Length: 276
Image (cartoon, rainbow, N blue to C red):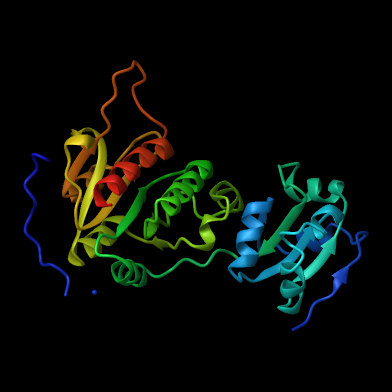
């Protein structure tokens, strides 16, 4: 059991497209700067299965006949997606030689959900919703990994700040491996105001800090907001002060700290274990 005494708070009452020729100039892609890029079989497959609007789909002939995509490509085309069958050289150009696995798509910029909408939806899904709050995560690989883990553990969403933190980029989408098709993210101007909104809605806020109470001696229950600090500085002082509890991951080795996505995965697993 945690040694922290909970603060008393009010509980909540709850057009058709065409197939473009492979020889089309790369400028077509460069003109789509208002769109974002996702690539790799799992992220693109998740987007197609979830009915996400794709502006353009670039794929090689092998992926065109892949059984996972055969029925989805005509449907995407009917919904307005331009299908462009290209060679791997073109795919390498589009992704700067990333591991595209033969398929790339451009989509409209990621649509963040409204904070209050996220809170209401989370509370409607379960009696024990869990929302992650990322306090200044700057590495898109970390943010993508956090999203992937959170969705895998059936958490209800993520909150990120607009300033001094990475947003949902193509790299985040790639690392999340399709999880963003099912996992909502809210982007807010002021993180502490967002925490206050969660608290008003009945969420207990747990911040991760080295000086916190041991994770394994902390009782997680009810609606939970888990704050993960930035890679270099951890939680900001104001954010730490806004938390109801501070928790730490007990470590016995000589490594002083953990990667933000690894730390979040450990905490989320323990939360899920207790709430099941």
